[in-house]
Image (tube, rainbow over all chains, first blue to last red; front, top):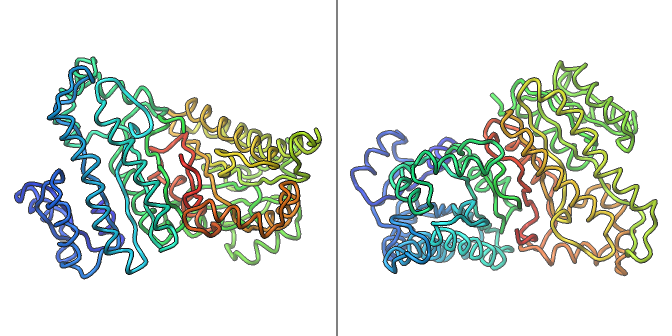
Length: 239
Length: 259
């Protein structure tokens, strides 16, 4: 998304926990002053709010907020789910989105313009065994998106969710093997196959496919699309 | 460099409204485009206004007839050598009435105009796209393809049927590089809306202005959608970036539909 936004002329703040990874990312994107990094943990309220403040201080305004971070760590079926994992997933996937959205809206509402994009998931509509926290929190952010969209719909601010199918991101490669066990699938390869098999295209999605939708929703062309659950899932979700 | 360089698109309808805006957006992105309508005169006027030279072509035909639908697809292939993108766009409904008072003719006409035309053109287009293992089919559905409104059953039924067709077809050709999607716009004041809206409002026991207000009030943006909203989503779905989106019912309705 960051690269696609930069390609379209935006200035972009990216976020992550590791300062080193952040600097590496900036070096690879090679966007000069048009990209900046803010080190912060998405599961922390102060870091998430700090990210919004940083973007406003750095570039003078905030037009587009992508609440993209999310995932699972040690997921398990409900009967084996630990409180610790459950609360982590709620912070990471739901509270992070709420904290970032609230703070961003406080900047956008007075200016009567803005775009909020939430990276939800096909699991925001469907359910799979073994990832109850992910499924529940992604469903929850979809509800948040719908409610917020109606709150700010006449203020030139749109709020949308993008619902990708499985994508082999770094985080999926890291946590996928454990998730596969929690889901009763055994191996990472079986996990990829289980998700792809539910699609029409029988392959995982790609990050570029999500980025293109993000650009559309963030652009002027997206001004009249709000409260929508935009699928990028190769035909997995039936609605 | 456009997102649709080298692609050939066919749009049912297309002289006005959403089809026309999509044709212009496709042209801008480098595609060759066939538009369609019943009237050769309106077709020529659209071509003159679009000023796309040999990259845009009009084929006259009544999409309520199967042979015209099939001739439109074949005509596209004859003109530009292939078909990469079908936008089954034409649609509307006349003689709305509550179900208890609905005529067979009104239901049949809406199904032909919206659903059968989509099926006929989709089938014909797939027969070209499957051998080339590449293609994009976009169907113009509606927010009424997801929701229902009293007095508008003929339109609601036909648009729901299109959404079902899209889901099935997407699963059939998903591994062949062909995507099949529906766009579901909220109310847009196109020429068809201006022509058929008053009758639809009457079926609902309200005025045309009240009908438009009902649509906008249900949305989050409290205004109607615009043809360009749909055109730009169509570009995305038709482009390489849309390769991973299929079987989806994309809401372009200002926040009206809850899913």
